[in-house]
Each structure stands twice: as C-alpha cells, then as structure tokens.
Image (cartoon, rainbow, N blue to C red; front, side):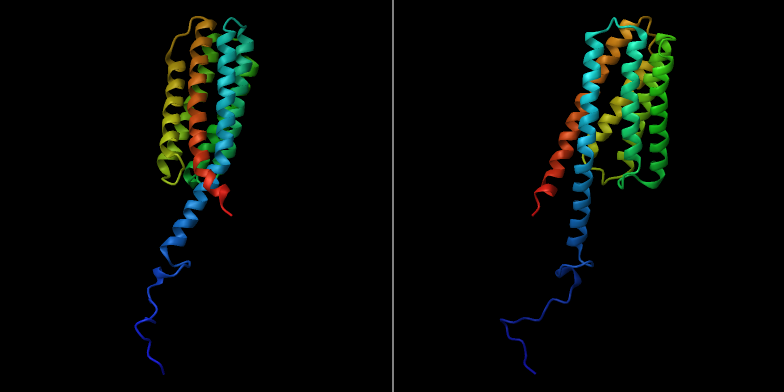
Length: 217
C-alpha cells in the first residue's frame, strides 16, 4: 500500500470542508436563495400598491371638493386592493404560522372596510375617516409585526418603517375630529402619497435583493 506523499496529503475528514447538505455554505446559499426569491415575488406587488396609493392621493388632493360618495369610493378601492394584497401575502413562506392567521384576519378586515366605504361613505365624514383610519392601522400593525417576528424578511428595516408610519396615519385619522370633507381629503391625500412613496422605495430595496437571483446562469 502506497503512503501519500507531501504533494498528496490526506483528505480533510471534516464535513464542513466539502459541499453538501452537512456543510454550512450550502445551507447559507439555500437561505440566501429563498430570500432572493421572496424579494423577487414581493417587490412587484409592493410597487403596484405604492403607485396606486400615490395616484389615489394625487386625485384626492387635486379634487378635494368632490362629494363624500366619490371620496369614499376612491378610498374604498384603495383599501380593497390593499386588503387583497395583504391576504395574498399572509400565505407567504416568510410569514410565521402565528402571524399568518393575524395577516389573514387583517387583510379580510381591510377588504370589509373597503366595501363599507363603497356602501356607506355618504353617511358622514367622521365615519369615512374612521373606516380609512382603522384600515391603515390594521395594515401598519401587520407589516411591522411580520418584520419584527422574522429576521429573514428582506429589507426588514424598510418594512418596519412602512408599518409604523401606516399605523401612525391610521391613528391620525381615527383621533382627529374632521369637521369638513375637504380637510379629510387633504390630510388623507397627503398621507396616501407619503405611504405610496415609502412603499415604492421599499419595493426598490427588494428589487435590489432579487436582481442577483435573476442574473444567475
């Protein structure tokens, strides 16, 4: 039996030295690949929601003297679409099991509030402000809770920030005594544009994480 020479050393018996399921590098690669895939799936939805928020906000600001029913329909469309996106996101692989049910309930309530804006928007300015405020509060709490409960969420800091300011916008609408539709339209329109811009920036951050995944050969 031949003895390995200096130029032919013994193979390293450590499992981490070779690629495989027991080594640390492949596991890390799989985890990074899952993060890229999640970012690739999420940034387009988030960018779409952000652009819708900006468009609705601009329309509300340009047309602040619209009737209560028209303003209610615009915000109803926004809450309905946001709730549907939230329902779809609640079943994502990045959402922990305990938060999945919370996300589903939050998304369903946003859809319900959007439908209420369609049906009962003409009742009063105060009620419309409450429906919009509760919808934003639910969305913000859910966004921040998912990001805080899972360290693997891509662009985690931006999602926490978006959740916090969304919840803050909801609180402002809930506690503020709006005496006229014009004031409500201006305040809510400004918040819509701010939330939309932050959402688009968040989507850009997610796209930067997804780009390497799409460039792999």
